[in-house]
Length: 409
Image (cartoon, rainbow, N blue to C red; front, side, top):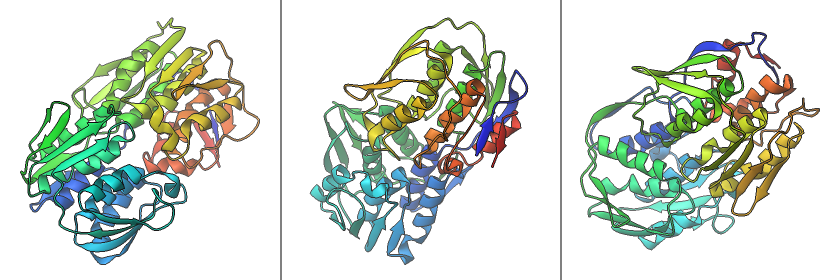
């Protein structure tokens, strides 16, 4: 697909953002674990959430479950199925079979789970023989993936005893853990932090209804668009200042990149205030790594020097996002360095050019969505596999077209 910048110099519009898949997926697991009725409104229409809902609706009558590319879905299901009576083969895409699952599996095994690797040790697919587990004392490495921790946390209220989760090494992406705890508490769970560990009391989930907020990760691409287009303003519906989502930090980060956020009752307005004079930005995204591609591409478009650290988890996502960013930015004549400890360094005052070859997305939704706004600087270019955005933001291209971007198949 070819994407070109709008004819209009200024971008304006009202966007109804996709609902948060992070909130949706957590709520779906709680719904499946609750003995009472739980109502979820405004559920995400993303591929990941649709896949999780389908598998939760069908697992009692289906012994082979395919999570495809959905990493959160896969990890949540490993923990969930371990505590259900039955036997399942849990598989996924070829990329999923390259994404490690050993830490979560071994943690569950230490607490009595019966899980076996069907191909490569430490990786999907898995054979899970579920049982009534009692996960009372859990020790897990907190430096690998917060999704492992959230998968275990969600089970806590359904256990027969109080659950204590203690951490080896520092915790990454802590806002995602806090999101999990907040949604659990919304449905009646009792949790607390105690001396660096998390305690979940034996208090079953209770009936309630939840309206899923719009996705702050999806909002980040609109912050990028506004940052790259002076004088523009867009209203994003369904967002609020007090959010479960850690990626709401994008509003504070993009203040440095000329984007001003105005909070309304159930929406935000973001505008380019034309006053940014920053030439260098240094960020640690340990808590919000999913914003990395958006921020790096924005800085590349603005010619700003950037040092972004805290990106350890990006090498085990849908692709190795660090290497993918480096390779695809080179097509725009932009040099990006990967330095020690999974840190990205972008030299300032580089000029983006129109790429000769197509931009590859590596089956990664965030690659497609972070690169598309660079049409505002490069003019136009082609993107391979644009439909990959359906993983988290199915209406992305439609929303871009609504504010003037031009797309051609």
